[in-house]
Image (cartoon, rainbow, N blue to C red; front, side, top):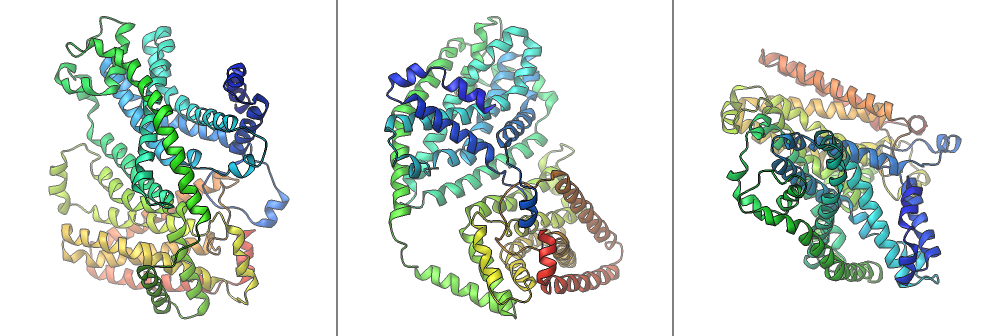
Length: 570
């Protein structure tokens, strides 16, 4: 696929030459970038043992194809507005365009920074005899390829459905408005990045952008999950477009109104047929503003920020940072006895603060739990207030308590991974007899830092809604979840913190089976917990038994020798 994209990008080579670019160098740069895209590992799972990788080393060549495939499946989740096209094309298209531009913009904001912010190529290209115009054009064309690989697969399911409903005319017309929408999305994203660059301090752009991406990920997930439960498909079929007079101020309506050029008899908001002209004018203005003002300002600010990050020496730690670090050392002494466990605790605590990849993967989980809980309780599509008032009469608190498993599970999964995994040689060079002590200290850091505060917050909510008698249920759920996570680490995740390379597993089937087993086991624990609601003394017995098993598994994990660790890695 990348060969086809490269061929299409180089078709107007005469134009690129007139713009001042060296076409041979341009082709070589684009070919290298696309080749590296295919070799990038997907950020999921953990690597196999080093010995096994030497025996079965395979070159990764299909990352771009997998990305396209994932975008295609993502596009299937918002096909439903196109079904309304048969009743009213403008309403259906306006809803689809609105959902598409929101999802597409969120996707760009959360992932586009890896393309825009990545200035590593300057280390290779700047010392070479490559002109500035060639470098700039290569970056613009690569960005276009990146957007193309996202937008086309995301819109393909809707494109197919629209073609089935409207025929060949619809098939030929459908991609044209999408191109204009992409111009608007890029305009919004560049404006957002520029705003983040202006609001952030020099050298802190990456951190500010990282937290903004986390926020957008949470909004994206919550919007999709909750709206899918609150929207009534039957009511959408009966919508009267004249009621929504405010829609004429929304750019996606302008683009949808352009369908009147193909089908003049389509019903639109009274007096708004002329707004279809803005479907062309506004996106072209957005493209002009992006190229003329936003992109140059962003690149200039980005380079300045990058220079601040690389050239300025590290400033002295503030009193707040020193106090925070001292607090970590006190907690390490409080929760650990051996020096090895303290070291694992401190390394994990500090590294989880510094790793952007870890924050991106773990922090959104804290919001996903309550969002998914409300998604579950709204499954009957009843009014929210009715569901909320009836909540104390249900046993849904068990579902909420055990959903917190995913927070600690996500954390202990990703504390084994790091971009700088080669630095883990320090573990093997130290006089450490039982590496399990380091793993145990890392687990305690995750438990104290992330799981315990979150479980306390969820517990307070449960006690507030369901009453003080549920305190014992909170305690039992906390012990069961801790037992389960320690058992998971013991059987499948006994790895030193931040010692594994980030890449997708070679066998995705095992990962799927493991996830299914996790869901089944947690469902079993929740079911047993539910049985204790019948007899209070049974709950006390369950607490004692779970606590004993938790201690046994923890002790086995802590005493893991090097031989067992090597077996797990192999």
